[in-house]
Image 1 (cartoon, rainbow, N blue to C red):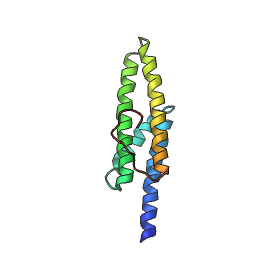
Image 2 (cartoon, rainbow, N blue to C red):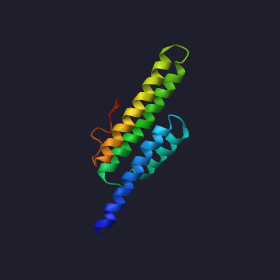
Image 3 (cartoon, helix red, strand yellow):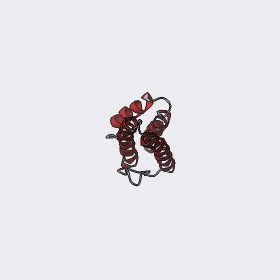
Image 4 (cartoon, rainbow, N blue to C red):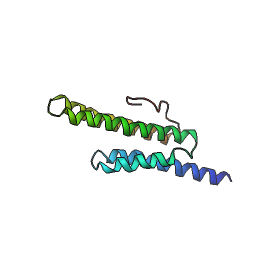
Length: 118
């Protein structure tokens, strides 16, 4: 019975890792971020608190990133839009890498409601 739980938990962390990778890929291929968001929403309720903290962090990462992308696109005509989009790219990479680090260490995300780098 312990092996089944371990396998289930490993599968859950595998899904969370895949979502982080999809988010990173969305910097090049935008649609993968939406796929990651759907996966996070589907999986968030039926897991332990360790993985749930990552799903919550991932969901917030998507919505905050979308907000920054919209603001950046609306302000492209003035120079600040380019800086917002550059910040968004760096912000997304840092959040995903830190999330992957916590996940690989077997830790829950310490602050899944953070707006900054987590």
